[in-house]
Every structure is written in C-alpha cells, then in structure tokens.
Amino acid sequence: YHGDKPEFAADAVSLFSVEQTLNWFRKLGLYTVTEASGRVYPYSDQANSVVDVLRFALMRPNIELRTGVEVTKIKRSGAGFLIDDGNTSTYCDKLIIACGGLAGTKLGGSMAGYKLLKSMGHRITKLRPTLVQLKSSWNGCVSLKGVRANCRASVYCGERLHSASVGELQFTDYGLSGPVIFEISRDVCYGAGDWHSRLDFLPDMEKAELFSALNLRRDRALPVEELLTGILHNRLGRVLTAAAGIRGQRTTDTVTDEELHAVCSIVKSLDIVLTETMGMDSAQVTAGGAVTDEFDPKTMESRLVPGLYACGEVLDIDGDCGGYNLQWAWSSGVLAGRNAGEVKK
Image (cartoon, rainbow, N blue to C red; front, side, top):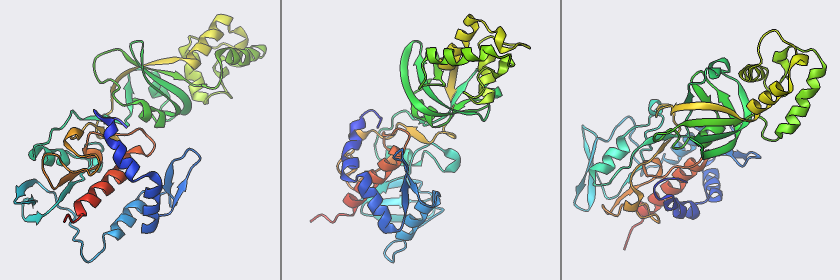
C-alpha cells in the first residue's frame, strides 16, 4: 500500500482479511475462482455479480436506499448530521463517507467525497492518477498499436531506477498500457526529470543466449525482417530490427556481428521516452486523498468530528495492481460500518 502513511491500512486489512472477505461474499451468494496468480474473480467472470449480491444484501425492511441523489452538503446538527441533497435534508446519528476517488471520472469518479470531508475540516492531499497508462513520444508505439508482449518493464528518472515489474505490456497509439504498466505507473512523470521506460522482451533469456539463437539464422538467407520471427510477435520483431538500424531489402546472411549485437541490445533493453501519464479519466485508482492522520485506523472514525467515518479510496491510501485496492475498500468499509453501527453504552 501507498500514501503518506501507508501503515494506516494495516489494521483494517488484518481485522478483515482476504479469507474473511471471501467468506463474507460467499454468504451473500457470490461464488469466486482463484487463479494460479492468486487473483480472485467472480465465477461468472462478471463484475456486476459483485454489485448484484451487495444490492441484494441491502434489500431489507429497515434499510432505505436512495439512488440518483447527490449529497451536496453535510453539517453538524447536535450529536449527529444533516445531509442535504439540494432538495431535502435528512438527519443521521453517524455518517460514513464512502464516495470513492476521482479516478475513472467517466464511470462515476468525482470530487464529492473530498469536498464533503473538506467541509468538515479535513485536509486533502494532492490527487493524481495511478494504475494508469503511460504516454510516450516514441513513434514505434503507433506501429505496434494493439501488440501485446510479456516483458520486464523498468521506469527510470534519469539513471535512477524508479520501479520495475514483469508482466504483460500492450502498445497503444499514445504509448504503453497493460498490467505491467499499471504496476509501475505510480508517481511516474510526477516531478521534473528525464523519465523513460526500459523494456526487456525476453526477461528469462540472457543476451548471449539470444545472440547464439539469432546467429543460427545467418546460415539461411531469410528476409532480414524475419530475424526475430518465432521469438517475438512478428510485428514487434520487425519494429525492433528496424530500430536496431537494420533496414532495406537485405537477408539474414548479410547481418554482421555488430548488427546482431545491436538487435540483441534492443530486444533486451529498449528505451522509450515517457512524456506523461494518462489522466484521471483513464486511471483505475486515485493516489492521494483525505489525510489519514486525522482518522483512527482501528475504527475509521474521524479524529476531528466524532461520528464521522471515511473508508476506501477517498482516504490517502492506494494499493498495487492485483486486487489490493478492492481489499482496502472491503476491509476499511467493514471496519467503518461495524464501528458506526455499534451502540455505545
């Protein structure tokens, strides 16, 4: 987890673990499947299955559910709160802000939660996109649009390694996408510097081994653009061969040792300039949020306003790619709900 105080997430995640989460959803009627990677998905392979069982759980006579209503203002009223939607005001004893973050604005991400908490005296950190695609000025991205490749992706600011991961990359007309990019995207291009990504398309093969494999192809007079065929995606192989400076109507038997080493270097270490991240519209998660020092990590209750709680992405906690953000939402949400609903004697 990340944030100014990432350790804030520890209590919630330990008090409502992954196993407890799965059992809880199972009781609501959700069946899941766990992949070899450890990622858990609905057995139906549809996200709306999660929404549906949560919706069914709210269908109780003592619960009033209002949809299509935006809360525009909250204010203290005695020991409780008045919630204003612009038309009506509703009183409550306890209030939980669970509005999510700004990421995915086209799908409902908004500033609502931050504004409501700020109105109650809470501070909000700088917000920025994370688990997001990266833009590049390398024109090869356009040629490779739609191509997927397994690789080790490393991000550098100058010569300083910023982050690295291994996984699937997808080229787009604007730059880089895919799970491996989401994993390394946090704080990329955040601040001045020479930001670039270094891609190794054969992370399990040493450069010398690749040279030996390609050297065998010099025994046959294949078109030079087929030098990497059978090893990498055909289109990727052609672009990388050209990037190494081997072009024209040549055959593989004309490739020199120096040229072959250049191809191996490109395959194992392609440097791509990064210009910026995609915006909040494209991001899966918001980095930043309500300052966690102002909340109790064991209850999610505000230290500033008794009876006010917050959970999930609206707080300054965000996780890596792979379900961590969902787990933070479940864990912190259950913690806030249990404590807000507790009748204190």
